[in-house]
Image 1 (tube, rainbow, N blue to C red):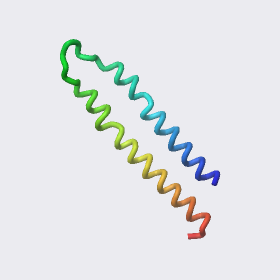
Image 2: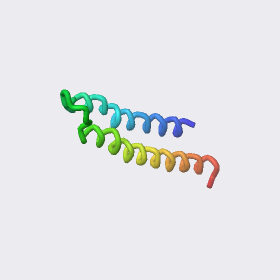
Image 3: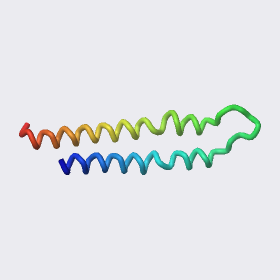
Length: 75
């Protein structure tokens, strides 16, 4: 149970550390003034950057949870 909690907290901390600065990065991107188009950097930060991080964190957590369950059940 403790190993599962540790894995969950580690995953949460890694996601918070990697995706938490996104609002700060978006604040640093210039707004564009009177233009209504959205800069490419905003699309890349919101539409592309989070997904590999989420995929890797999720895959790591699932592998870790299955390993913990296998240790308990003897599989």
